Every structure is written in C-alpha cells, then in structure tokens.
Image 1 (spheres, rainbow, N blue to C red):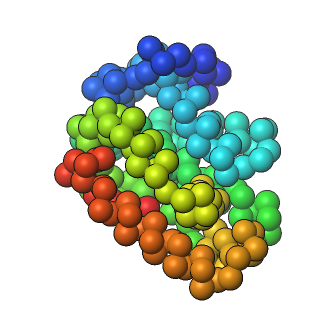
Image 2 (spheres, rainbow, N blue to C red):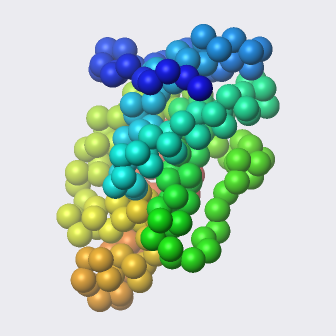
Length: 205
C-alpha cells in the first residue's frame, strides 16, 4: 500500500494532467507514480470520507481501500479520459456511505461495487471538465453561500450523509413536506447556476 500522505499545501495541488499522466505510469506497474497520486490526493479524499464517518480509524481504512481499488483498476482507467480526482471522490463517497450504513445497522442499502463504477466511466466527468471546475472553485463557493442555511444543511445531509428525505426531516426536526420543498428549491437553484460553475458537464449526484 502507498505510504501515508504528506499534508498538501494550496500551492501543491495536483493538476488534472499530472494525475492522468501519473495514472498512466501506475497502469504500467510504476509504484512510485502511484504513490505520488496518493500523496497529492489523499488529504482531500480523506476530507470527503470524514464528512460521512465520525470514526478516524474507519475513515483511514476506507481511504486505503479506495486507493487500493484505484491501483487495481488503473489499467482499465488509464487512457479513458476520466478524471482521477472525480473517480476517487465518487468512489470514496460510495465506500464511506456503505461503511456508515453497516456501522449504523440500517439494513441493506443499494451500493455501487467497484465493477459497477468502472462500468460507469462514461458518465464520470473527464479531466478537462474537472480542470474547469477547479478554476471555478471560488464561484462554486459563492453559489453555495447564497443558499439559505436550512437548504444547505439538508443538501449536506443528502450528499455527504446519504440520508433520505424522511431521515433529513427527522434529523433537522422539520416537517417532511418542508424538507421536500427545501430540497426541490435547492435543486432548482443549483440547476440554474450549474452551467456557469461547471461549463458543459452536467451530473445528477
């Protein structure tokens, strides 16, 4: 497994082309290039996982599992045009939600396996789309800051907590009808501003 990630500074953020080039090297069995992907991306991906899992040890284990999966799938992903950053983010979120569901004993949850995700490469954003998103990060933050607090809290629970509408209503102690209305309003708001933030790429999370 790769070594523990070094803290990432704002000036050392990986560029999209760097990550895709490094993955091509990893696909040829070059462990050093894969370790570099890990060092650059692990802090950000661990942040995504920790938004879902409270347990630090469990979060680190999910992180290791996701990067181990990336290593195994590097040959099929290299040259596909899919952003490494996007794949890691989607897979980490899926794996963390799976782990959270098991910990909470919430019963069976529909999950995306690694095979399923690799079969969905066509709908994941490509490297160029992610580059545009990175360039528009301040704009994205500005858009989200315009949402009312209640809508932002509900959105956070759905995206990072994997909660359904009824669970969001219970956690926020609000009527279900109000939560549904808030989420619909949030969806409309983000759809109207999506093109300005992410350019031509569109995805339903």
